[in-house]
Image (cartoon, rainbow, N blue to C red; front, side, top):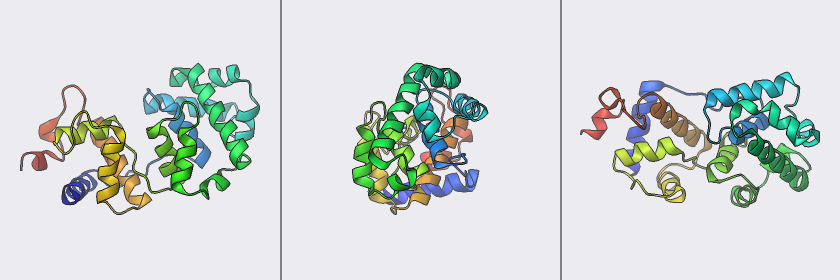
Length: 215
């Protein structure tokens, strides 16, 4: 499995180059993006983040103090905006009560207990929690998403019904435990999923991994 994972990584890196992901100016912006990205496109997330910037709401204190209905209107473009506004409020409340509103303090917590704390926040599931840990806090944890599961099941490296933890363990157990590597690998899989490995009508013969699948 280790050699398969590295061969896929090397093929994708050669095809796409570094992805410089996650695009944001601050850790808090990454965290908001991770919550807003649930069940929507990145373009919609960008629109919501821009609206928050325009309204000068992109700070922990502002988000904490703004009424949830006003926050919902600001993130309307992300879809399910009432739910997402509540989830953002829940996270900020957690950050305030556990770490005095300081992302720096939160980042000093060890990975396992911090992941457990994040998963206890209403509305934050494994993918969102791991995105926060990896991309906002530079913690070495692999993010699994629908692209990851689709690509690896099509290459018969995982079962289609494999759950989040099972897929994550494949990466965590067989790759060097490095945030930089996990970051780049996940970003490359997202790029592959968006450009080639579509849910419907995938572009298999043009895919950078075509030679691996048919070796």
